[in-house]
Length: 334
Length: 262
Image 1: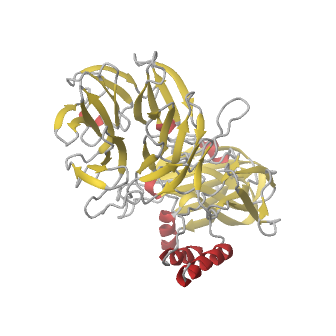
Image 2: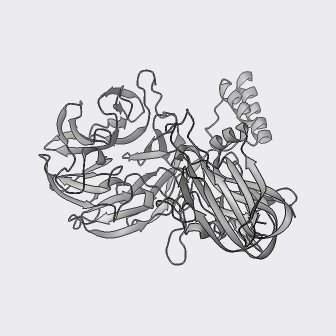
Image 3: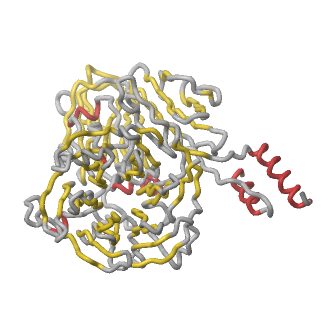
C-alpha cells in the first residue's frame, strides 16, 4: 500500500467512525434483495434527453427499449450495461405504455399514447405498422379525447387489449386489423386502470391482470372480461404488472397521496399473488385475518417509480415519472 | 456535514465509498388529530435493523428523543416528532404531527353554501365530528368549496366559554388546494344579534408560505374569553391561483376538515 492509498484508507475509516457513514445498502426482503445502482446508465442527457421515463421492454437480442414523453427521442434504446445504443421517435407526446410482442418471427412494439388517444404498433426501428383508434361505436365514449390509453397487452389469439388508464377505465379488445371486438372493465371495477398483462402462470387458465392503481388493487379478469379476483395492496399505487417467472413485479408510483409525494418503491408478489418483497418499501406484514398492513416507503431510493423490467439474472430496471429526468436505475439482485 | 465529507472522500484517489440513501420518515398512525381526553399514537417503520426515536413538544413535553417501543398516549395538545435510523442508511427526516385537544362540543351546525358534490363529507357535521382528514382528499373527512366564502353557524352545547377557535384546512399547491385568506368570528344570541369577535387576514408572506406548504394547515384565532350560545365563522377562500400555477387565474379549492372551539 503506497502512502496516498494508506492515507485515504485511514481517512475513510476515521471519517466513517466519526460521521457514522452508512454501510453497503441492500433493499428488499426474503429471497428478493438488491443492491442499488443509480448510475446504471451514464448517457449524455444533451444527446438523449428524457422527461418522464415511462416503460421498458427487452427484445430477444437483449436490447432494452424505453418510452419517454420527450419528443426529441420518444424511444431510447439501451444495452444491459446501460449504454445508450440509439433512439427514435418525435411524434409521440404522450408516449406511455410499451409492450413487445413476437409475431411470426418478428418483434413489434405497441406504444400507448394518451395524448394522441391511440395505440401505435411499430417495428423495432420505429416504422409504423398500424394504429388502434378510440372505440367510437362502443357506446361508452363521446369523443376521441375521452380515450387515454396507458397500456397494451396481447391476448393468446393475437388480439390487442388496451387499458384506458387515464380515460374512462375500460379495457378495449381489438382484432389485429384494428376493429373493436369487445369492451370490458370500466369504472365499476377499475380506478386508474393503468396497466395490463396476460398472466400465463397457470397454463390451463390464462387471465388478465389489471392494475386499479388509485384503488391500490390488482384486479383479475378471465379472458371473457369477467372479474374473478381482487388482490388488495394497501399503500401500493401499482403501475403495471410485469410477470417474470412465478412472480409479478410492480413499480409502485407512490405509497401516499398526493400524486407527487415521492414515496414510491418496487413490489414483488409470489405465485399466489402474495407480497414477498418491497425493495425501498416496508416489509410486507400480514394481520391475523390474512389482510396486508399498508405498505409505505422506507428508503428514499426512488421518487416516482413507473415501470420495472426484470432481466434473466433477476436484476430489476426501474423507470421513473416526474423524478428529475433521470435515466433508469438498476436493482442488482444479491 | 456528513454529505460534504462523503463527497470529499469520493474525490480522493483510490477510495470507494458505496452509494447511500436516506430513510423515509416513520409512519404515524393515529385515529384522529383531534381528541377530547387522550389519543393513542402508533409509530411504524417496518424495516429489519431500524429503530424509531420520538419526542413530544407541548404541555408535559418529554425530555429529548426517546426510543419508541410501543403506542404513546397523548393527553394534551402537542407536536409529536419522530425519526428512523438504520446502520446502512442516513437517518430519516422528521415525521411530525400536531395533535389538538378539541375543547367544547357543539350541538349542531349549518353550512352555507353546501360543499361541492365531489367532496360532500358529512356536510356541516364534518366540521365538528372530531375526525381529521388524511392525505386522501376523498376520504370522506374533508369538505371542499370552489371559490365560495363559507359560513358555518353553530349552536353551542349550552352556554359555553370560548377562548380560541381553530380552523383546520389543507395546502397542496400542485392539487390546486390552498388554505383560506381570511377568517371572521362572530358570536350571537337567540335573538339573532351577531357581534364581531375576531378577524384574521393572511399577510403577503403567509400567502406565499401557503403555496409552499404541503399538508395540514391550521389557524388559531384567540378570543377574549366570553360565554356564548352561538358562533358564526366566515371563511374566505384563497381566491385565484397565482401566475406561476398551471391553473393561473382559476379559483383554488378550499378544503376543511374541522373547526375546534376551545
